[in-house]
Length: 509
Image (cartoon, rainbow, N blue to C red; front, side, top):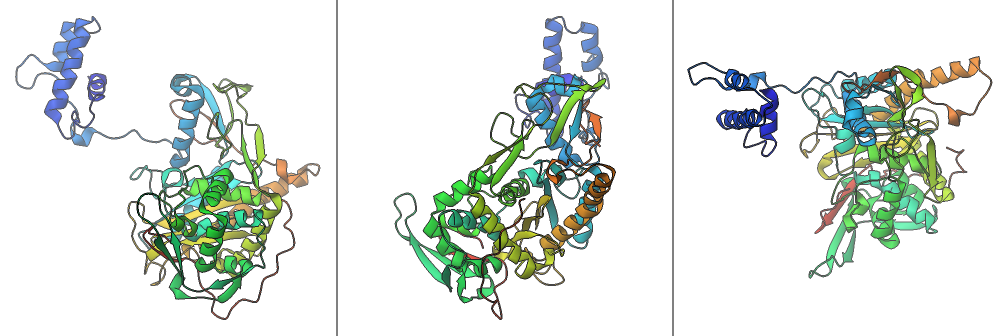
């Protein structure tokens, strides 16, 4: 009877919802059962047992609302495993994925995953906004940790993979990388002041105005590209981006790993995209920057048969024979073979990282500083509705988003009575993630090196455990920077992260 109810709902799940329209759902279920009798798949007696003989109380009623519950997700990291599960289905088909006796070795490090979750939840425990996080291994492209929300049972929507939000100034590294590729210098000087740019949008409307202001109306007067990066100057980056061209900037973001189609409206230069981006794709694109412009993926990455992407699966074997790899539909052997592609000029990428180090050491992202090599970029949208910090170390790249999960709500007082921007909770969470990585995975690598002959760090793979996929998979267990470009001394009162872009395009800062 339950199968018949589900089969009957397929044509219109809303119209035949047992929660909203129980009578219609019952009639539809009974029609399916009637057809089963006609086709000899059900006996008349079985039909009567379910439907009833017409007398009061006979037959089996459809479930009441309090009896309808989604299946439990038996996973210690359900946001990650639901993302991984679909990849297994895509590669092997549903039958093989759920009934083929496959055993999946994933990229996640469960101890680190749990630490990252605890960092996110504890840091924001006293406020309503939530955090979404993606952490990637720079040497494999594997996802080491993923936080898609606060509570999977209550909110299964994965913000890390599907939460498309405006990146604000966290989008500026794509402008920076493209500009350096085209020959712009870190020492090139721009005016820092309120600016207006005229542009011709598509369609009959002509010559609209793109108005740009800095966060809190704080300006430098003049600034080199290096200083503008350090203090996230909207005025400078809007002018630079228009000089480079929005189409070129969009193309650079996409080839670095942004999978969402990037709009080319002027506001995109300040992170005001027509469609937002997810923490996972931002972390992945940033990892390309940290790898000297080399995009990483593999034969088992998350976009089978397409371009390189982040990886969740290390290998797939048979549950009863862990030495036997299982080939997928794309022809992959079942074990991830790391692959790379040079998509950005290496010198431009390395110089970008040099400049973004200054953001952490003495700019808008100082709260992310750990005392070791680190680079990154803050991002804050208008009215503080979204706040980001994305960046990397030698070993990992991580992106942290903070905001209201199901709405665009200004965060004006949530940071100890002050506004939330990229340099507050996101940078603080990122700092703790890096510290946790060094404590949990970094120390394990050092111990492993002590037990073995010296080997290159670039081939190390974080420890994983394995689990079968039936009924569903559960988690298993940069080149040296060049000399920093010269910058002028920091101004007495530099602008902080974010900013405002206004006009017909609705730009964000």
